[in-house]
Image (tube, rainbow, N blue to C red):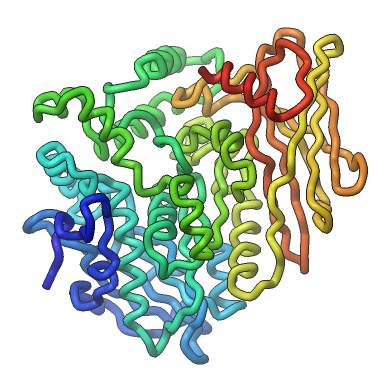
Length: 496
């Protein structure tokens, strides 16, 4: 019997009922293309199916395409990776590192056709029904994060039903942006997954801004209006292309399509407290920092890859203070990604480190082909007289990265503003100080009030490069500081 979203609870505080999610009888699987050899890759076989994720509300099923990929010959795949494809009924092939894992290491691949809610079938209607039901019920199951996570988990259920092809012992889930949100939710809440690699994905704070638009962040929204006004036709003081304005406005429209406005909430009888609560509850399922003890006890292997300038990843400073050992690569100056002409110069998912890291992480997880070094302990000292910042990065014994760099940005704009996405970063190589400690001195301009910085390190083991970063840090340049604890005090004061 098909299940409704509202029935997917075991306890009142649970968002997902794993027993229902793992039940293949409710998939209503339709075979569009049975197992066949790929025309482009004769060493790969594929199967295209369409499955029911759930009946999101009475009468509205969410059905998505799923392409299953496996080596053309050999026994069932014992390693599996779940990622994404376009939401169209057409067989898909993985690319990049995932394709290499399939072809060179016999890793099975599950591609689920999940996208923005307005692009998921029924296209142009699903997001409207989602908003209507959220306004009526205030139930966070009627939000994008919930259905995105469900999509990956149900795709895994469909793959596990193919026991002649897939009998996985280890399963990684990965994706970027909304698909990274899905990966994080799946890894956190579904213990069938043993590893996850989210890209440009929020970690602990809400992405992009207030889910109930207009209910919070008034100052940031005012700054954004000023930023847009500077992008009038013709040359602008920021040196961005003229198409940046239309690109940002189109992005905001997509976000409005998947959220609700203050006016809509008020019309539905919501109080201001209801709106503020929903700002958090809409994104609650992906907050990995609230589950760290649990997932570490479970043995979940995870690594995040984000950009310092990505507005869906605010709170990196707080993350570094609270969880300095969090496994992450923060691309200095890295942006989220978006349509051509938006003025981005470093889209994080397109950087070579992203594919290198995914391949190294997967082979570490599946085969133990290499270890994954943890982040260094960063120490900073500011010499006000010389305007010099000295930073050291210390690794434990046995870890000696081949490439070590410090990157910094002066007087950054506040999170949730467009301007923060275009902040400039500079970099300088670090030199070995002693043992496994690396050091660099940088001279900062006299006008600088604040500096944010990250060290990045590329380690190669068994021919597999892996790039990590230190925790994100920031200090106010008011007096000499000698350790990271005092840095955190200054950073907190600056942030507040």
